[in-house]
Length: 220
Ligand code: TMP
Image (cartoon, rainbow, N blue to C red; front, side, top):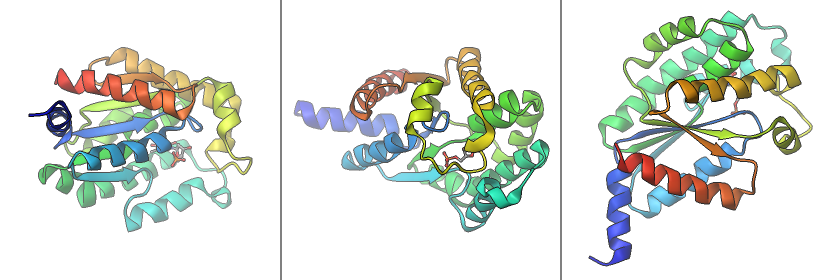
């Protein structure tokens, strides 16, 4: 087999039937990398189920509108957490679990790690309470790897559009805690998390991502 064909076969083995999450603070650039990773995997013959949270189903997109719209007003943090989880439960039932059963790569833009960082570390909910609700919503589905795209507050702020949604508008101190929440999760569970420095341009972040994901999935 040629070197190129060998590399394609290797990536197929690494990715088929896996569940990867790309996550990080608002303005981390993760969504750009999600789309790029989908193209990369598809070019290697892997069927990809790409999803985003909140959303990804008809019901989930309705919940997303409620969560991100300023008209929603002051939403209690427990209600907020349960709405994110409701969107997730539907997404798992309708799309993620069936795709994994078919042996596809599931690539999620945000997952439980977001709820732990936003409603937990930043919002003040107990992380164990969030994990207990996640156990109901996720029905045993857990990511093989959660990649955290880490950015300083300055980088994140410089990448956001001036029209902030309800979550983005929560202020600098809230978003500082969100970042810390992600870093704490990665520190606590290094086997399932990978932190990528996402302060550079999209190309250098991509190169670091591919190198490190290859290493991490080879070890699985
Ligand atoms: P997005 O802009 O990356 O699509 O994410 C939507 C917003 O929702 C973003 O500000 C992060 C926030 N969020 C939470 O607060 N908790 C969650 O569980 C999820 C999935 C997202």
